[in-house]
Length: 339
Image (cartoon, rainbow, N blue to C red; front, side, top):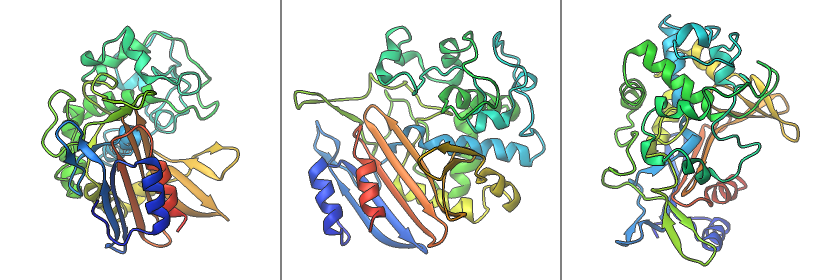
């Protein structure tokens, strides 16, 4: 395992959970910690490295939110634009007053194709809708398009993947580009994220980690049959830890959006947790302590994927933890944060 003065408490967590992945911690552009552990491909004993690409599941919702904000900044869209006015797709039971803001903040009240409040087995989705057919946003519409509203518009926060699928379709409609092409051209390329992209599970490029699911008998299997064939606006991009650090820097240097619109992206709109001062902006979680924002963070979990990354404005520090196992990123992330 490559290590850069890994703290003994962090090392203990790595060993206890058999962490598989790569970690990067930077402060003021200086690398504080960087290390990898485990295998990107177990069959061929390929080790995880600092340049390994990892899936980040819902961690890439912030890319979708930035894309929407860019279109708003260009005057091609408004946060108050109504979904029914932007897309000509039929949603017979959706409230016509749903806006882009509602979708960004998970307050639209629409049904979700995977409702995390009532479902816990992501793989069960593909019994009726094979995962190998899921390659773009339109492929997901049959999973929720004709379902009734779950909540009233703006009633409360309800984490919703379908809402970000719709935002991806909005990006396509307004930009006249495929969603992943827009993200690569307008975000990844601008931020210097040269190794990142939305890759098909059956056509992964080199230096990309396979995701692994641990079975109860101690064996493991890859996640190729457990997640959509290709990720999109609600989750599924592949990044390196270095590229994710580039994204945070570009975002806070106002290279992706103007300062005014960046502040709109990062505004704590919705209180999400009664037990914590945790809020949600546009595609990003926000922690507040004593009226001061202490952390912006994104997370992602899929079968064979766990991801945590945060930017701490007071110290200009960023942490990126990518794992190609279903669990582990949170434990390592918290061990580093507790230091």
